[in-house]
Length: 535
View 1 (cartoon, helix red, strand yellow):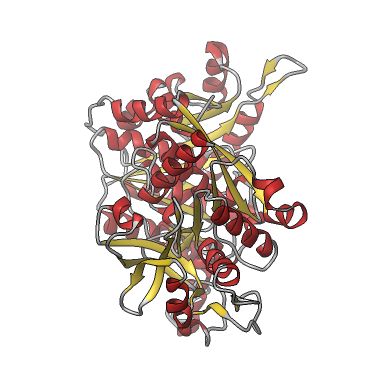
View 2 (cartoon, helix red, strand yellow):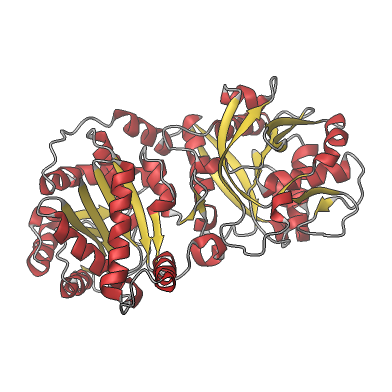
């Protein structure tokens, strides 16, 4: 088993996650199996209760874990299927240690960061390795070198690498090499300082990934090599990509990054062509068509809040040989200015998931506009609930229809709290979470898109379509396109008198890849292209 540890220095948001994911792509292309994990130093047990403004999206795994959004990159870039094991936080570590201490597992010993915290972290690495059975385990350490909260994780991986033995572990450090425009110079000092911090801890990175907006040049590479004690060919340039993040694996391959990694880890895995990946990137960069998609949400100003969603739209665009221009629409703006003024001219309208009642009426107006104007509509999670509320109000004439999440006293609770959620007090990890089966209805667009009667998709919600209104809504023109048979829960709806109006209770954006677009997103973009071209 080989282990790769990816750390970051100087500033956050350097792209450690994308670098780790891209390395996974390159190693898989050489015939190796990989698994990836994100170790985060914050004290939250998971990001499930954190605000999207603070943390970005919450990514959900098949086994129902609420995890860091970087796990989305890992699954999109590789064939790895990840689980709750693949995201570890300080909160999880300390909660487990305190639980053990309260039980008396430590037999009266003083509980300390070393060895107890570090042993817990090392134990998770071993568990990931054993349960994945992968050839290579890639561990990304969140945060920036120098952060106090990250020190136990760095000490743990230092110890682990020593225990793993020579040739079985590798430290990769992602760092910033800034270009100072006023001076007209590339500066290496931030990288030198960052590596010096690592060396103080006892970690000597073998490979440096240098993020820069300018080509480094031989002189800069030599300087970094000399002052950071890293071989010259191990100073890897990682420039800002021009078009898409899916260029990163190709750029790193051009730098012989994967070849270098294999050399350090004594891996005999010859390189292969990446023809399919190159074709996908070419479709993204030079598409034949273009379509505008309005994403109506409440966190639209934050790129990371809907990270998987935006990537899914790009994947579907590539599958349709189309550039997808994402128009971010704040739902509250629709409430102020009206749907016609805000949404006119779009090829399709997508309403994603979310929580809280801010902007809800704007989303309902968006669903109504899409239904009445015959614009392709795709509702996800809350977006499905919104579509149900809108249909109940304006087609079925159920005045005041709503979700009990937003109006507990609504006369028509067409969306209501799941029965097993009514007694739950805590918020963390208590929603309907993870992959669950769905039986598709014959003769529906959804069944045609999936090409299967049975599917499995990931969930993250507490509220559900109220079956008490099912007959009334279906008689008025709404099809139930899929159900969770065990509890007869409505998972998918379609409108019969509409060219493309589909909404799902699950999150399809968590199961899509750049070279294998999700069928619902692929169908949505195809329908939106048709609409925009005929408008």
